[in-house]
Image (cartoon, rainbow, N blue to C red; front, side):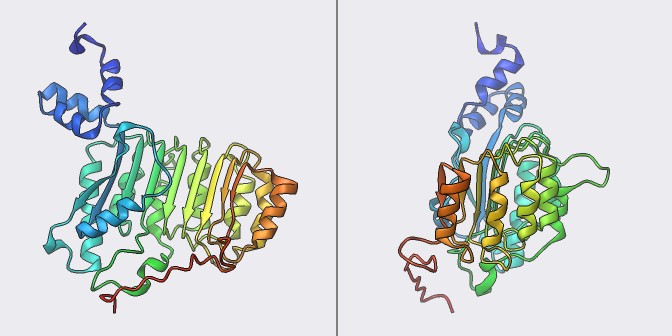
Length: 312
């Protein structure tokens, strides 16, 4: 039986296992193939960068979230030099280019990872329309990236923003997403309320990773402990947060997360190593726990000092 004789559902299923380059090649063979390929692209991991060096470093420091799907290789795209003059231009062009790509695949994508400097409202609104997403990763933390017009403290944190409302709720009351199984946010200015709305609307969440989300407080932990995913969440990473209120007190909520198999509190400097270890041994029984501080430094420092002569 020829491929064209298969039902369209089986054709899409077969194509979904192709690497992205092969899928794009197939889409060039005919108009029918192009339409079919559009509906078969389910995984996209992409980043927009201002230099080749930043693209390389970002690719080397990809988050721990990975997929066994053949399409999950990270795709780096470079901005033209004329679009990299300053921070605001870079962020705007990153968002515009990503939005142009995603607008074609709104219905088909299931697994999406974006590497950009910041999220703006139009792109956030577009993400909120992706009803079939199961895995979403927004990588906004690139501390090794350098630019002459970028403030030193830019990568240290992100301010609270109404942009995240686009992912938290809709004006008509309908769900945003709804099918998420994993969520990864890095250097996000999302608030406790905004994140709680996302979790509330996605009861299938099994994995949540929050890196350098300094706007989150103990209220997030309190909400999570009594949320719809409290007993089904399997992996939780809350890392690189020295925010006030993120201290030993948040450990009181971990016990309610009955399904946890993995917990990371890496570089949460206000949480005590020994207390985490003791409570896991006596109360939680989580199979894998990453302690707040590295074993060789009470402050969590790895002892490395970066020296960049071009950074002034």
